[in-house]
Length: 105
Image (cartoon, rainbow, N blue to C red; front, side):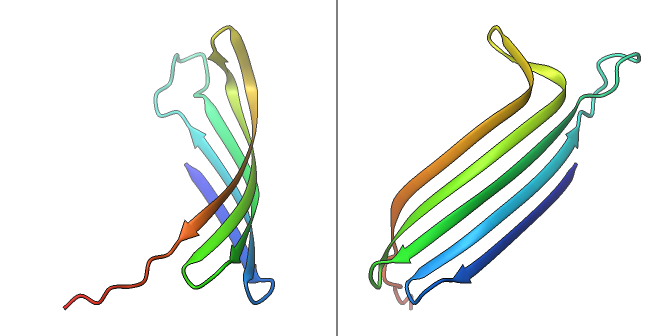
């Protein structure tokens, strides 16, 4: 398996932080189906962005978006549909609450 990830983040203002993320993975099946057929291989590419805004001392909100593309050397089937390329987009919005640290004695 080959895996490469990169992430770049930056403080955009006093309360806003942004980041960009990239990832690539290549994987090959351990078991060979037959001696005549090559082992299946899979490629995965992902890119995304994230924004975080601090609303107060213990609360923040985030907005993120990721796009993913997966390819396979052999068709993968989901019900009656078979393909070698899958594409997915994921977005999110949420609120994080950060509790105050507790002293443990």
